[in-house]
Image 1 (tube, rainbow, N blue to C red):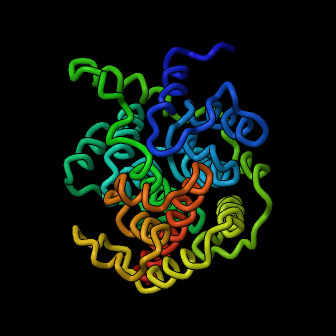
Image 2: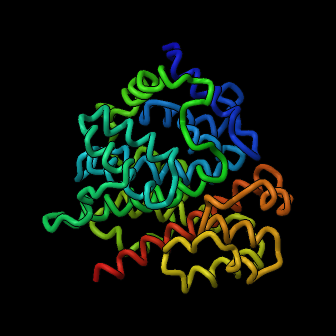
Amino acid sequence: MAPTPVKLALRRALRDVRYVRPVSYGRATGLVRDVYRQLERDFGMLAPPVALQSPSPPVLAASWLMLRESLVATGATSRADREVVATLVSQANSCPFCVEVHGMALDSLGHSSVASAIAAGRPVADPRSSATLSGAAHSELTAVAFAFHYLNRVVSVFLGPSPLPPSVPDSARAKAKAVLGRFLKPVEDAPPGDSLEFLRAGSRDFAWAEGNPVVEDAFSRAEAAFSALEISPVVRDVVSREMSTWDSLPPGLSRSWVDVTDDPAARLALVVAKAPYQVDDALVAAAGLGDRELIELVGWASFVAAQRCVTTSAHSED
């Protein structure tokens, strides 16, 4: 079946990605092609936040496993509750792109008032705080939070503030959002586990995912993929050390905390982890990385930070 004009437009949107050149849909082969096809089938579109990571096929696959098996696949919670968590996390991480995208999804699911409240910074009930959640439901919503702590960082580095291009006039934005929102509605059949084949099995040691074996398997496979990346020992040491004591709160406007290292790649990775909205051209240029290396550095730092955010949140609930 031929792609719709909207799907074609989203494929072309990859041209607007900063710093790297993603693999186009027409040139995708192997693992990238397989992920792209499943991404369009199950998410409704070639979502730029995932597809932009295609210069590194393992990182692309890992990001899709986390997104699909937490937000997209049929599970113990409603898609609306998962979209609320995705939007709340994105708002807390100062990621307007993701707030807008998942606000569209909430609109399409009949929850426009919730989307508007989150976008305006008004309090909204967090589905994760419900006392009636089962273990599987809680781990599923935690997985959504993990995935968006990751994706918010990637988006902040590589994409602009809105999924709609600046050329869309204000008078047409509401209609464009409504069209995109329809593509984000849940597909009728998205069985859990369909994406697992893209990566090798991991250690399955995520305590927060107990009671949800597919989620645990997906995030363990993602962790194994990120652990296998060729990240320099200096970067690993600096970021891991700083993450071990980080309270997961934004560090503020000052960048004095980056002065713990003189290594340009480590400085970039640390800003990605703690304050991705502060990443700028100078930081990226100083690191001097090629497309694949930059995607892998940002992906690895984002995963480590997401893991820290989820772990810190879990401990605060105990």
